Length: 239
Ligand SMILES: *Cc1c(COP(=O)(O)O)cnc(C)c1O
Image 1: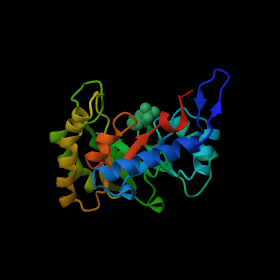
Image 2 (image 1 turned 90 degrees about the vertical axis):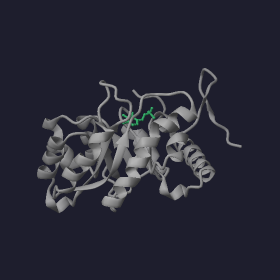
Image 3 (image 1 turned 180 degrees about the vertical axis):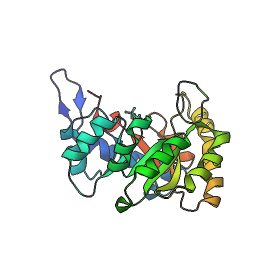
Image 4 (image 1 turned 120 degrees about the vertical axis):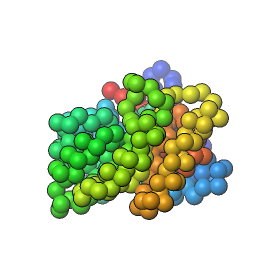
């Protein structure tokens, strides 16, 4: 049994390393429940609005892949944290005037939802850095407020991205509207899981289905997720 730190107010405050081991254990258990190999499911630590000290703590606990949403904030962190084995994922909305800095700073981009952004990222990626690994963001809820391409336009965008010399098409990503029950969450993820498997036949290098956050990771694991994007459950509330 571990003894968690007590705060002044008496609530417990587990450390980042405790949070990471708890989540890893839950992911392993859930993977087994759905007949999946836990090693096929990556934990992406979403570190937006979290301090450098917290990222260093996660690194010390073995976390290597971090997801950021805001370009300026991310670039400052990338410059400060020099560990060579860090892998940086951009997961936020992309404005076209930010593509050059994204292409120069990140290993992955999950949030591509139009060809113009993909073309700019490819043109601005230095050859020496190797291809930028990208996912197409899919809109599963058809809400006008959420970004992402509708399901029926994904195949065409994938085809266009696959032609670009400095991008490597690796998968699909989605942020669905919240739903309460596991059954409902699984239904929401089902179409992207089916489309992902279909696209893998055309693009064998596609190995990434970036679905699942703190509230819906079980449904995502059940529906073939390979990347869970977890923020507050690792780091605590954002600043
Ligand atoms: C913030 C964010 C997350 C993580 O959210 P938490 O609720 O902190 O776990 C995951 N994916 C995206 C795209 C995000 O912007």
